[in-house]
Amino acid sequence: MGYDEPGRGGLSESASASPVTGAEAVLDEPETEPGRDRFGVYIVWETLLLLGFGALVYLVWREDPAMLRGSGLRNLIVDVVGLGLLALAAGLTLRTAAVNLAIGPVAVAAGLHFAEQSDRGVLATVGTATAVAAIGGLLLGLVVVLLHVPGWAASLGGAAGVIVYIEQRSAPVLVQGDYDPRGTAGQLFVGFAAIAVFGGLFGAVNPIRRLVGRFRPTADPARRRGAAAAVVVTGGYVCSTVLATLAGVLIASADQRVTPATGLDWTVLAVGATLLAGTSAFGLRGGVFGTLLVAGALGLFLGYAQARGWTVSLWAIGGAALAVGLVVTRMVETYGRPAAVVGVPAPPPAEPVSGGGWSVAQPQPVGDWPPVLPAQPAVGSTDPWGDRRWESSPRTWDVDDR
Image (cartoon, rainbow, N blue to C red; front, top):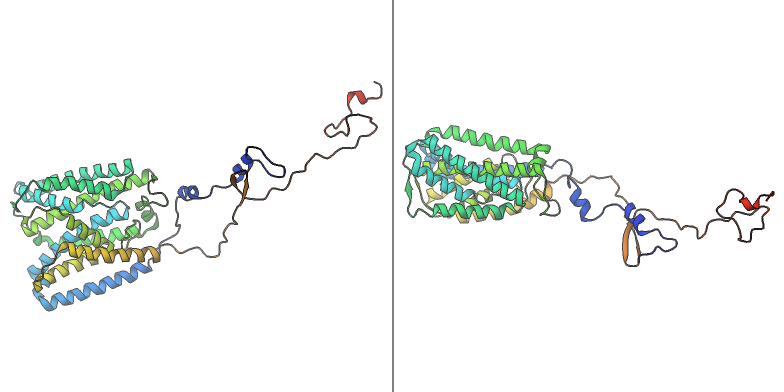
């Protein structure tokens, strides 16, 4: 096994000449899918979402027209913005391929804090909650990127810690302050719509899309994705916890009371809404108007169910959204990835060289070496050692005068 055979190159020479193949080549490749995503699938899907949104507007108008004007419309807008902020929080971390499952408990905890402390001033109360949420998101992001562990597992642990804080209350808490978001419903909706749409537009730019989704694994999920991916993921966790905090404050101020609960049903609803909007469960890919349309459709459906006197569970709505959203993820991953390059011939496969239990890739065949060096004819010599093979000049004892 350790010797070279005649007519075959040595092991070290073959190994050095062979290219890197297999998993190492995939892992070292910075982009496994170069090129721009195809956005036709998003256009088709968001058109269907728009049609569904229009159908729900018609149903609500037929059932209760007062819901779409005056105070009813302001109530509906506040509910849509609250759901939309949670969907944005989930969508941002899904885009970075490190989903934050703690957004629901964070929203409930922020609502409880706002209800208990809002009499001290809205800005001070919201500022404190936002600062705590940002620090918590930073710590969660550092755990994910430093240990390089799945985001869903780390954020589920963070959700457990937030639920411990929520369980310190056993009865609903009434809002102590007098802030009413209905008075600024229009401004809130414009701000939410701008964040959702411009975020989607920026995510459609190829360099930004690849930077945001850099944490998405290409071959080995446990392989670190670099410092840029770590910074993006950590920033995503900070922004998502802040958005969830604002959503909880908004919902609490609109309802004027907060019931202690785990909030995981809000997480399921937010993740389901994000997947339904067209964001891939694998990260990286997403649409432009999907989050805005899905948040509006969910708000309309909840209002329509209330007008009809239906008792609906957030778990049921979130589960249904998740089921459809997983189908949308497969559709996005199938028809949204960059088109394959046509007309570029593939390199020929390497021929393996095997012998004695070793198999080394050989890019080109190696010809047989000559068994012996060619003999040079001896001129005027009676050397008993045979033909001269190496010397190019006369030997000293062949000189005539010796």
